[in-house]
Length: 212
Image (cartoon, rainbow, N blue to C red; front, side, top):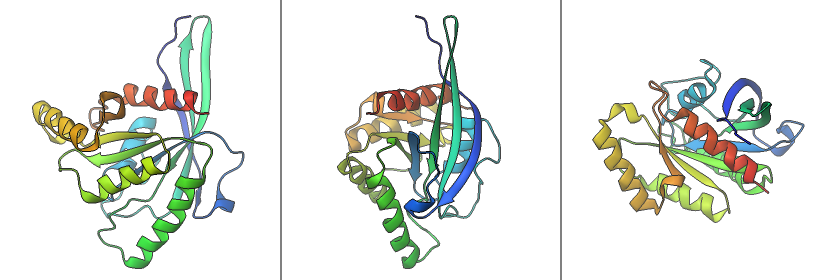
Protein backbone atom coordinates (compact mmCIF):
# COMPACT_ATOMS: atom_id res chain seq x y z
CA UNK A 1 0.00 0.00 0.00
CA UNK A 2 1.32 3.43 -0.92
CA UNK A 3 1.58 5.77 2.03
CA UNK A 4 2.11 9.52 2.01
CA UNK A 5 4.13 11.57 4.45
CA UNK A 6 2.84 12.59 7.86
CA UNK A 7 1.82 16.17 8.59
CA UNK A 8 0.65 17.96 11.73
CA UNK A 9 -2.89 19.11 11.01
CA UNK A 10 -4.00 20.34 14.44
CA UNK A 11 -2.28 21.42 17.64
CA UNK A 12 -3.55 22.78 20.93
CA UNK A 13 -2.18 23.57 24.37
CA UNK A 14 -3.43 21.15 27.04
CA UNK A 15 -1.82 21.90 30.40
CA UNK A 16 1.31 22.77 32.36
CA UNK A 17 2.76 20.56 35.07
CA UNK A 18 5.58 20.32 37.59
CA UNK A 19 4.59 17.00 39.18
CA UNK A 20 3.14 13.68 38.08
CA UNK A 21 -0.35 14.26 39.41
CA UNK A 22 -0.63 17.28 37.10
CA UNK A 23 0.15 15.29 33.93
CA UNK A 24 -2.79 15.25 31.49
CA UNK A 25 -5.37 12.50 31.23
CA UNK A 26 -5.89 10.37 29.26
CA UNK A 27 -2.31 9.25 28.86
CA UNK A 28 -0.97 8.81 25.35
CA UNK A 29 2.32 8.46 23.54
CA UNK A 30 4.69 11.43 23.82
CA UNK A 31 7.58 13.19 22.08
CA UNK A 32 9.50 15.61 24.30
CA UNK A 33 11.57 18.66 23.30
CA UNK A 34 14.52 19.81 25.39
CA UNK A 35 17.45 22.18 24.91
CA UNK A 36 19.52 24.97 26.37
CA UNK A 37 17.73 28.18 27.26
CA UNK A 38 17.18 30.40 24.20
CA UNK A 39 17.95 27.65 21.68
CA UNK A 40 14.77 28.46 19.75
CA UNK A 41 12.58 25.66 21.09
CA UNK A 42 9.31 27.59 21.14
CA UNK A 43 9.91 28.91 17.63
CA UNK A 44 10.60 25.40 16.36
CA UNK A 45 7.43 24.03 17.97
CA UNK A 46 5.38 26.80 16.36
CA UNK A 47 7.03 26.07 13.01
CA UNK A 48 6.45 22.35 13.34
CA UNK A 49 2.77 22.85 14.13
CA UNK A 50 2.36 25.79 11.72
CA UNK A 51 0.66 27.77 14.43
CA UNK A 52 2.22 31.06 15.48
CA UNK A 53 1.89 31.75 19.18
CA UNK A 54 1.16 28.15 20.18
CA UNK A 55 4.35 28.07 22.25
CA UNK A 56 5.20 31.46 23.70
CA UNK A 57 8.46 32.87 22.30
CA UNK A 58 10.59 35.03 24.58
CA UNK A 59 13.92 36.82 24.25
CA UNK A 60 14.58 36.00 27.92
CA UNK A 61 16.48 32.71 28.39
CA UNK A 62 14.80 30.20 30.67
CA UNK A 63 11.27 31.53 30.11
CA UNK A 64 9.72 28.06 30.13
CA UNK A 65 9.65 26.92 33.76
CA UNK A 66 7.04 24.15 33.58
CA UNK A 67 6.40 21.00 31.55
CA UNK A 68 3.98 22.13 28.84
CA UNK A 69 1.78 19.60 27.07
CA UNK A 70 0.37 20.10 23.57
CA UNK A 71 -2.04 17.70 21.88
CA UNK A 72 -1.10 17.15 18.24
CA UNK A 73 -3.13 15.50 15.50
CA UNK A 74 -1.18 13.98 12.63
CA UNK A 75 -2.41 12.70 9.29
CA UNK A 76 -1.05 11.02 6.17
CA UNK A 77 -2.76 9.94 3.01
CA UNK A 78 -2.85 6.25 2.16
CA UNK A 79 -4.37 4.36 -0.71
CA UNK A 80 -8.12 4.62 -0.32
CA UNK A 81 -8.10 6.91 2.71
CA UNK A 82 -5.94 8.39 5.48
CA UNK A 83 -4.08 7.39 8.62
CA UNK A 84 -4.52 9.60 11.67
CA UNK A 85 -2.71 9.72 15.00
CA UNK A 86 -2.68 11.75 18.21
CA UNK A 87 0.20 12.34 20.58
CA UNK A 88 1.49 14.76 23.17
CA UNK A 89 4.30 17.11 22.30
CA UNK A 90 5.95 17.85 25.64
CA UNK A 91 7.89 21.12 25.93
CA UNK A 92 10.49 20.90 28.71
CA UNK A 93 12.22 23.83 30.47
CA UNK A 94 15.58 24.83 29.05
CA UNK A 95 18.82 23.91 30.72
CA UNK A 96 21.61 26.45 31.08
CA UNK A 97 19.66 29.04 33.04
CA UNK A 98 21.66 32.08 32.02
CA UNK A 99 19.54 34.37 34.21
CA UNK A 100 18.10 32.11 36.90
CA UNK A 101 19.47 30.96 40.22
CA UNK A 102 20.51 27.74 41.91
CA UNK A 103 17.05 27.11 43.32
CA UNK A 104 15.60 26.98 39.80
CA UNK A 105 18.40 24.66 38.67
CA UNK A 106 17.62 22.31 41.56
CA UNK A 107 13.92 22.46 40.71
CA UNK A 108 14.67 21.65 37.06
CA UNK A 109 16.87 18.69 37.93
CA UNK A 110 14.12 17.40 40.20
CA UNK A 111 10.86 17.43 38.25
CA UNK A 112 12.44 17.11 34.80
CA UNK A 113 14.50 14.13 35.93
CA UNK A 114 11.39 12.46 37.31
CA UNK A 115 9.51 13.03 34.07
CA UNK A 116 12.27 11.81 31.74
CA UNK A 117 13.17 8.74 33.78
CA UNK A 118 9.62 7.76 34.68
CA UNK A 119 7.41 8.05 31.60
CA UNK A 120 6.50 4.79 29.88
CA UNK A 121 4.81 6.80 27.13
CA UNK A 122 7.90 8.76 26.09
CA UNK A 123 8.86 7.51 22.62
CA UNK A 124 11.36 10.19 21.60
CA UNK A 125 13.33 13.08 23.09
CA UNK A 126 14.29 15.78 20.62
CA UNK A 127 17.34 17.61 21.97
CA UNK A 128 17.76 21.03 20.36
CA UNK A 129 21.24 22.52 19.99
CA UNK A 130 22.22 25.84 18.39
CA UNK A 131 24.12 24.95 15.21
CA UNK A 132 26.25 28.11 15.41
CA UNK A 133 28.30 26.93 18.39
CA UNK A 134 30.62 24.06 19.15
CA UNK A 135 29.11 21.32 21.33
CA UNK A 136 28.81 22.77 24.83
CA UNK A 137 29.51 20.75 27.94
CA UNK A 138 25.90 21.02 29.08
CA UNK A 139 24.66 19.75 25.69
CA UNK A 140 27.02 16.77 25.78
CA UNK A 141 26.17 15.96 29.40
CA UNK A 142 22.43 16.15 28.68
CA UNK A 143 22.75 13.91 25.62
CA UNK A 144 24.65 11.19 27.49
CA UNK A 145 22.31 11.47 30.47
CA UNK A 146 19.30 10.94 28.19
CA UNK A 147 20.96 7.89 26.65
CA UNK A 148 21.74 6.62 30.14
CA UNK A 149 18.02 6.77 30.91
CA UNK A 150 17.43 4.44 27.96
CA UNK A 151 15.70 7.14 25.92
CA UNK A 152 15.50 7.46 22.14
CA UNK A 153 17.18 10.78 21.28
CA UNK A 154 17.01 12.86 18.09
CA UNK A 155 19.45 15.80 17.86
CA UNK A 156 18.03 18.89 16.14
CA UNK A 157 20.52 21.60 15.15
CA UNK A 158 18.49 24.82 15.24
CA UNK A 159 18.98 28.19 13.52
CA UNK A 160 20.50 26.62 10.41
CA UNK A 161 19.51 29.71 8.41
CA UNK A 162 22.10 31.71 10.39
CA UNK A 163 24.93 29.88 8.60
CA UNK A 164 25.85 29.28 4.99
CA UNK A 165 25.03 25.87 3.58
CA UNK A 166 28.68 24.79 3.72
CA UNK A 167 29.13 26.05 7.28
CA UNK A 168 25.96 24.25 8.39
CA UNK A 169 27.19 21.01 6.82
CA UNK A 170 30.54 21.39 8.61
CA UNK A 171 28.83 21.97 11.95
CA UNK A 172 26.59 18.96 11.44
CA UNK A 173 29.67 16.83 10.72
CA UNK A 174 31.31 18.15 13.90
CA UNK A 175 28.33 17.17 16.05
CA UNK A 176 28.19 13.75 14.42
CA UNK A 177 31.82 13.16 15.39
CA UNK A 178 31.54 14.58 18.90
CA UNK A 179 28.38 12.67 19.81
CA UNK A 180 28.94 9.53 17.74
CA UNK A 181 25.84 10.03 15.58
CA UNK A 182 24.77 8.77 12.20
CA UNK A 183 22.47 10.74 9.88
CA UNK A 184 19.34 9.11 11.29
CA UNK A 185 20.02 10.68 14.71
CA UNK A 186 20.68 14.28 13.70
CA UNK A 187 18.87 16.85 11.61
CA UNK A 188 19.25 20.57 10.85
CA UNK A 189 16.29 22.92 11.07
CA UNK A 190 15.43 26.50 10.10
CA UNK A 191 12.16 28.01 11.33
CA UNK A 192 12.40 30.85 8.81
CA UNK A 193 12.61 28.46 5.88
CA UNK A 194 10.78 25.47 7.40
CA UNK A 195 13.77 23.47 6.23
CA UNK A 196 13.39 19.75 6.98
CA UNK A 197 9.97 20.22 8.62
CA UNK A 198 8.43 17.24 6.83
CA UNK A 199 11.49 15.09 7.53
CA UNK A 200 11.40 15.89 11.26
CA UNK A 201 7.67 15.15 11.51
CA UNK A 202 8.18 11.78 9.85
CA UNK A 203 11.12 10.94 12.12
CA UNK A 204 8.93 11.72 15.12
CA UNK A 205 6.05 9.63 13.79
CA UNK A 206 8.38 6.69 13.04
CA UNK A 207 9.62 6.80 16.63
CA UNK A 208 6.06 6.87 17.93
CA UNK A 209 5.07 3.92 15.74
CA UNK A 210 8.10 1.88 16.83
CA UNK A 211 7.68 2.57 20.55
CA UNK A 212 6.89 -0.47 22.66
